[in-house]
Image (cartoon, rainbow, N blue to C red):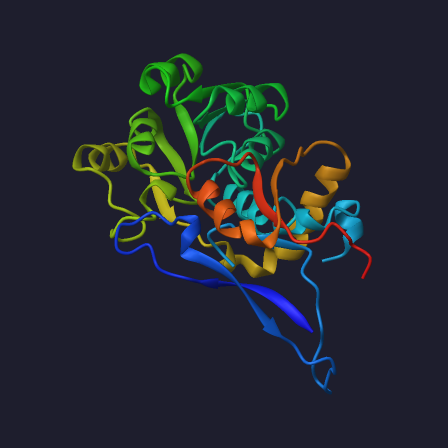
Length: 287
């Protein structure tokens, strides 16, 4: 049997951005016979997030197990539960950077579901801003490529920021942290603006921003969802329930064809996706 596979063709290099040409498609042969102890599988969807369950939980949407009812959903839910310190009824404001991405688009909705009175998203296009406010329940959205982010934050978060779901790091996060309240909390989910730089993780804050963090007692601890495996089962069930009840809207950006895996990965790393970025290998789901 002849099959196709994606292999690493080259590395971006130190401080380099990954591009589609870093991957290539090649053919290989699989034996027709399956030996004892072996299984044969067929790939339907391929995840291209920078990390590597029962279909009824997602109403048959198998790809959702790569996103909202999978690791990104668990990351958003457990991150908020463990690091957000949200108390329903206390009028907390949450800001989400990378708000139209796989985790961010879920985190804003989960923030509301768990009791935040106001959720503001930061993203990179007017289309994404409109999606956040018109479909995903965000109270406001900021296009960081247009206008002054600090001024817009002051307008949309007049009582300051209590919880920051940080997906991007860099200048945007520095701006948000400068407007955070005393004893507020940063959920350190990702730092995608820093991934292609040779810096430690989590990246250190500039001295002035670090001073603000310390003076205001703002928590900023590294969050790894794999440290909370005992919460995975209950988390998946909660995400599935919200989805089935229509409380959690799920967005995907689907690219068709294994040969486009590199293109999809490059697009995800540069903000080309809305929601979860996946590659569809086969739309045939009858196994």
